[in-house]
Length: 202
Image (cartoon, rainbow, N blue to C red; front, side):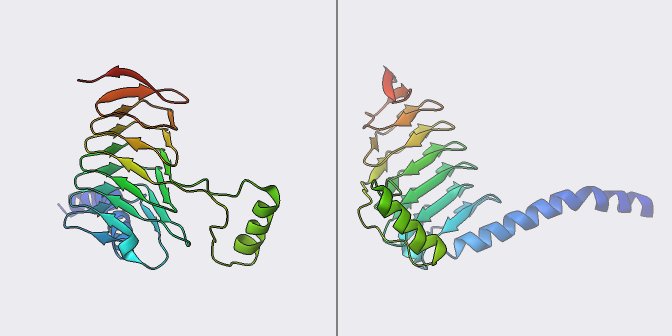
């Protein structure tokens, strides 16, 4: 009997380690956001926030297993209830990203409301010197931003990129590997680079 218990204890070690890692990730992330009851953060979740939990709001029963980042110079991320952000997905904001309820964002997606860097080469070099070499705060400068909105019940498939200024309508589906540069109407399937409407869903 003692041998049986030893075997069971050893067999449970990976499960216990996984649970411990998941619990640690959740506790680390939850302190950096404003989260409703039942919001959860998986083992791969990562939050990058300039010490202001009000800038990232996560709805009830939503599961985040990707990265949420708001830039030093601004940005806000709001995710509705019962939504999912998949592993390896990144939501970066320097303006505002609003995601509705019951939205599925699959793995390895990028949603960014900013160009991230300046268009001018000298400005980019100066930006690198200030932020990476000197460790100073990330400044907006001439970086362009525009808000993103994703409606309720939308489904963003894996490896999708959604760029600044885009609105994706309620119930829309974005096909895998798409690059979304323009608005997507409600309840359509769109796909491609750049993404175009393939057909209506209703």
